[in-house]
Image 1 (cartoon, rainbow, N blue to C red):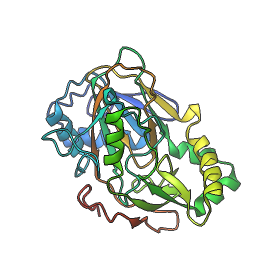
Image 2 (image 1 turned 90 degrees about the horizontal axis):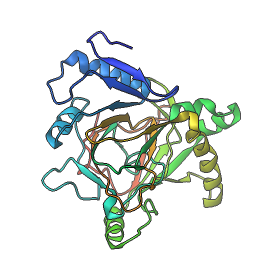
Image 3 (image 1 turned 120 degrees about the horizontal axis):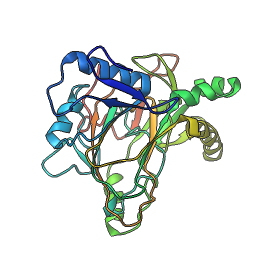
Image 4 (image 1 turned 90 degrees about the vertical axis):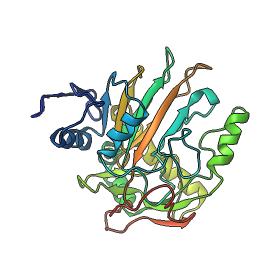
Length: 299
C-alpha cells in the first residue's frame, strides 16, 4: 500500500506485521510521515525497516518521535554512556527465549519498543512477535467473558531467563535486585484504538484471587491463543534492520537457536500509560513503587 507521503507499507503476515519501504530513518522525518508510520503501527502492530544502518543517536531520535523515552530498564544497566539504550546481548548467555511483553511488572509498561540489529548470527536469532488482539478475538465466548473479568499479578521475580553461565547469573541477580509486583487486567483496552487484547505473557505469574495451580492452568490456556502460528510474525534479522512494535498489544520471543554465535541488538522504549481493563479500572502497583526512575508518567 502506498501512502500519501510516498513510501510503501507492505503487509508481511495476514494478522500482524508490515515492512516499511522508502523511508530513511536517519533523515529528518516530516510530521506527516511520522503520523502515517504511527497509523501503520496501530494497524499492523509491528513494523520492519530494513537496512537502515542507524547509530545509537539515530535510534534514540526515531523512537522519541513517538513519545518520551524510558531509561533502559528498571533494574538492568544500560549501554555505557547511553541511559536510554538496553543492550540485548546473546553472547553473554542472556537470552529471553520466553514469550513476554516488555516490562509489564511495572505499573506503566512501555508504549512501544524499537529493536535495532547490530550483530546477527548467520542463522537463527530471529524475533517472533505475536498479536494479542487476534488472540483475544480467537477465544471462544465463554473464555472471553472469563478473561474480561480477570486480573493478573506480573512480577520480575521469577526465572525469566535461566542462567547458563556466570555472566547470565549476574544478570539474573541484577534483574531481581529490586522486586516489582503489579496487577494488570488480563484484557487490556488499547488507549488509541479501543481494541481488546490479552495482556499476559511471561511476567504474568498468578491470577488475582486464585491459587498458583489454577493460575498456571488459566494463563496457559489464554497464552496458547496468543502463540497460535496465525498470530505470529517472524523477523529474520540482517544487520542495520530496525523493528518498531506496539508493546500494548503484542508479545515477543527470541528463540535460542544460534548456539554460541554472537547476537547483539539495542533496545529503546517509549514511555506508556497504565493499562486499563474493560471496566475502565487502571492497573495498580503492589510492590516496588511506581518505577519513576525508569519511566516518566504519561497522562
